[in-house]
Image (spheres, rainbow, N blue to C red):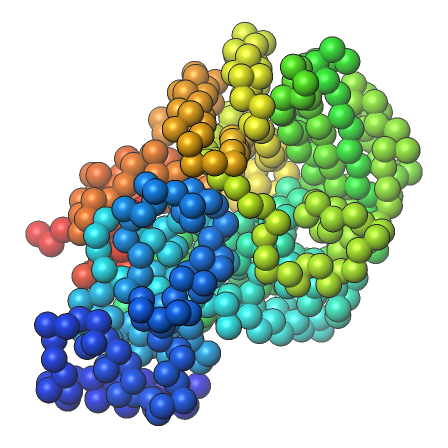
Length: 527
């Protein structure tokens, strides 16, 4: 900490005394500013556009071919420089030098931003990209039931490191192991045990971040308002998150995973209708989500669950609360919690090493678009009929419905910026995938029309959406546009009544709107 503070003073002193650095050439100015603080052995930290390392590094964590193999994406702005920091002071220098050189800063942790905003811009705003993949240290403290997780680590790496120390502790975050913790935690973050323990953001105890002035802060120095904002309000609007301190949660030595599939002709529609009514009212220890997808001209329903207990406890519970599912012992398997993580990540539980969780490379290689909704009441039979008709029109579509209730209904809506808690029975994620750029317009039109169709059957005023499923169709900030009213269109969908508090925090800590993107929190215009 002392070294970082001293170096910060050196950086700022040298920066503001370097009046001789030329300013018209912003790129040269940024590089000269950065390297004025370091010796020659730091020359590989800043990657310029003309470097042979630039494109491979930029493309290495793009998880959606809409932002990789697309002519329309070629019109988007790419970073002027990519910074690959290996120490915190590199990030401080990046922010200070970017501000001086007229650049903004974006950060990429895992690269899973649904709209590519962590590494590109739909405007012509020049920016520097900070790639945080070197910041992946994880320190697990089982005795105190905590962990410090650097922001470039992935969920898979976090789960693996916890399991190294103990098989009776876990963490309530997502099921995709290649997702970076930086964006996941700062947008909320849910997983298979969130009905028992809440969101990942609900379990954040402390954080380290660099603000718009290049200063490093922790919870104590940033204050409770900013600490509140970064736990669900999107950390990229407020600074560069360096690390999170999280509270681990106890899990049983043995848990049960299960899956039941039904097609429409096997009574799948009726089972799903019952699922709508019971899934959010089941015990907190039971997570049971539903997947709806087309399959050879019919609708297939897949019900996948995790129970924090044994089969002998699960079967009578399901027989009492949800007999229509027809869950049998042969459809269930007792495993450790870390094996359940593998299962929901799509791995074979018994035939693959836990080290597969350390792999940062996504297995998906295609184009996709996703949108989200929240339901406050079951979709009617008539509504489902129209929904299924539209799903059958698109063979590469899928809906994932995640039940709420449990602990999520007990946490106040304003506890963190994530507001979708009490009163919501499930969340819907709509997904469509495709293989070639030529198919893009067809599939984008399909999912937008489906979203429009669903309007009468989901939450209203506002129609809620999940911030971590970023969707630019909901609205966007214009270039250098800090209009509160414009941002409010999408902001209320993501944050509801918490949006105004986020705006006040943003205005207080980043009044110049340095940390800007198409859906960043705006600042209030000065009176």
